[in-house]
Image (cartoon, rainbow, N blue to C red):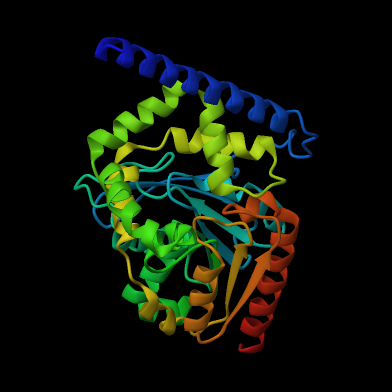
Length: 349
């Protein structure tokens, strides 16, 4: 067999393989979309009704902030995950804004917020953004902080930087599907330590190179929505996930800015905020989906074990987006926690 013919056969086989994979992806997505979906009618992109405008953070970054609920009610501040936006808290602000002041914002370089003028996409900066929201959008009353994934990491960084603020104003903290150290090892550790060591350099080379990340993002868009849907389902959701929810998360993540996938994600992968948890002495709750492949139950246990006043709950058949995927169970846990910490605050005077 000539070399040219060998290459031709190899290329044909590769194309056939890609075509077969694409067909399988379309079939899998079609089957999932054809399931009965109780969330199909939800307007997941709906924003909280009060537009508080742009809040200027410490370095001039403009943060988009919105709110729902009575202004004089106890406040909850929701902090979303990387590549996402405030709409991932859809089920929470709609459920709790009848009796709580729900404040939501898009992190820097996410959603409707601006990119930092000096390029600071560190967790430290995210924590200072959280402080800016507290100072300019919440007022001086007590508050509960709720953070998902990167949003939980930002809360841990806030605890590390603003201990006095934590002690004076924060009456409760909720960590949702998050971690505080060695995120790559947690994510890849399930495949075995030897393979994890081999995959780590490849993962970092792709993620930390802006040109490669941009090409990868363009490739995903070119390959189509079905592949993006499959990736989102595999990385963020459990087996019973709503197609509407998966498509919503897919749309948000697909539109994330390249620097979020590179600079900001690198900071998350290199973080070590375990010591900061020990300063969170207020009541704290950790929630994780039992199918979370990004920040698994081991991450949740590690957080709970470092919290002086923490408890943890596992939501079955939920992935990394537990607050969306199993929102009824999640809201029940959050509601009981809010009642508890508010009762304690009122009893304390």
